[in-house]
Amino acid sequence: MPDASPLFQPLKVGDFSISNRIAMAPLTRNRAEKGSDAPRDLNVEYYRQRASAGLIVSEGSQISQQGQGYVWTPGIYTDKQVAGWRRITDAVHAEGGRIVIQIWHVGRVSHVSLQKDGAAPVGPSSVPAKTRTYVETGFVDVSQPRALSAEELPGIVADFARATRLAKEAGFDGVEIHGANGYLLDQFLKDGANQRTDSYGGSIENRIRLPLEIAEACAKAWSPGRVGIRLSPVTPANGISESNPQPLFESLVGKLSDLGLAFVHVIEGATGGPRDNAPFDYAALRQAFKGVYIANNGYTRDLAIDAVASGHADAIAFGKAFIANPDLVERLRQGAPLNEWDQNSFYGGDERGYTDYPTLKTAKAA
Ligand code: 8OZ
Image 1 (cartoon, protein in one colour):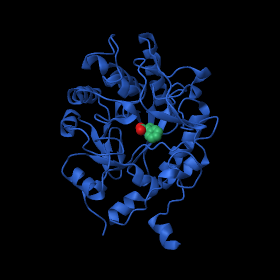
Image 2: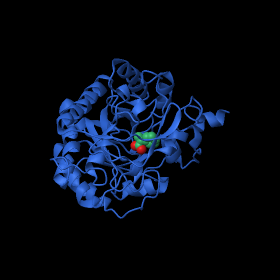
Image 3: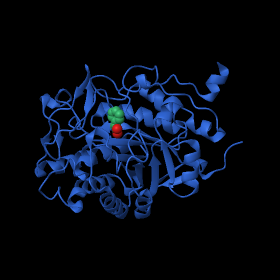
Image 4: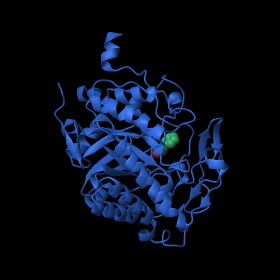
């Protein structure tokens, strides 16, 4: 019996609608074309297979070379990348799906070998992240970052706005600004990384300034109803920390709501880890935001059904389950068993562990 719970019902998200409230979370897979970082045939097939998600949020896609922190992640700043993405959005739309692109600047989480002319990665302050990244030759410590000058910030805002315009040109339904997991926006937000003494550091008002300027610029570049943002209030991902996240994120989300953004996408707890690593009142964020609230991290079918039925969230994003189950929505609808994911093929490689996971239909035929 198809499940009639609201999880499987349509939803209006800003300027567009989705056919169910199950989102595919953004998932870094490092399989863009080598050299150009443009999406290629293999990536088209991967997203096409997952188009029954109510909403696909693409893997993080750098808005500039400076914004790249890992090898073979796709970009959204060249014509070739836009043309590659166009084939993906066409394929997803042909299957009746919706797809937004996650636009990403890694900030200090990068390595000189990924930067133009071996330059230092940039961040709010010259505080290195205690984390690693991977480059062509394998895992490496991230490089010592350089603090961005205030004069450079309008250029970064402009790069996000350009990515939004290019996303529209590439046929996406919208953009998701990557504001989570210890990357550039999270670095400005959180006091463990932001030691600035200018108008972008110190008070909450100052630390939310750059994320708000970026959100506003993206909204202007297209429409507020085409823009969402992903946040992770208490994640320790990539060595990030914040001494008092509750008022910081309530203030930020309230202002994002005033801008009329389509959605906020909130990672509850530690990214890919425990949902309760630190106390946080997520209901207060939902209260502060008038658009769609998408919750993510460690949801099971039962948790997801309850979260949407109770009003905790409007939609639920699944990450790793979507890697291993292209037909996740159908499986959840039926309460069917899920394929297990193979961690070894998450990052980089070929079609194995990428486009070869069976659906219920192909498993039956085999
Ligand atoms: C895993 C590996 C590399 C990047 C994130 C974009 O955490 C990522 C990411 C995850 O948001």
